[in-house]
Length: 311
View (cartoon, rainbow, N blue to C red):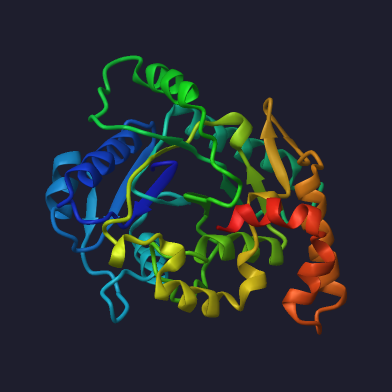
């Protein structure tokens, strides 16, 4: 039985650059030990790519009126067809390396050791910041490829801000009631963290222990070439999430970090302090408008800096 089932809904393989980075990403997943991969959707070229890469393909995903896959359907199909106890939804432009599986095994082991001591550790979610990387050629997956890639990524030195979450790894018992979020639009990933915190699950930021590589690309696949933040479907995701407050959750809201083979509490920074203050104020003054709480929790001298996370 595999350790992890990765599932994803790639974009069409019609754009040469998008096709290349998706093949790079999916190939990197298949090279990990004890994993299986499920690709979802009917996009052009997807069935052929799945066969080429030797992974499972499930075409019939429920879509919205515009034809974009729904997160709820993706989760249901992955849960029904996975052979592992751990699921990982991941964007199809993300390259993973062996340190990812090592982080999963280490986190699972540490949680298992602590289950008798704390409540809420039976359910968890792993996430991390990504490293943005400019790439123009297919990866050479010859021996030592991960070392070469890691060195090149560090030279570009583009660690993404904590607002971006491109994968979530969790046990099958988690996220059984996903709203009909629209994939590829803003908001749903922030809700994933909100949901975990609301349910008192352990939210583990493994940024210090792994390198997750995002291959940069444009947004020509979206109407007008605008980012997903500006897409009308994002408003629907925000509505389904329960409002703006619930999509303010980011990696800053993690409960633990995987650091030096230990689960530790995240170090308190100015951004984390402001975020904690905001959550406390929202809990106490839940009846006040969202913008009023934000004005109190985010003094002007910090607000511009903080809001950069949500552009």
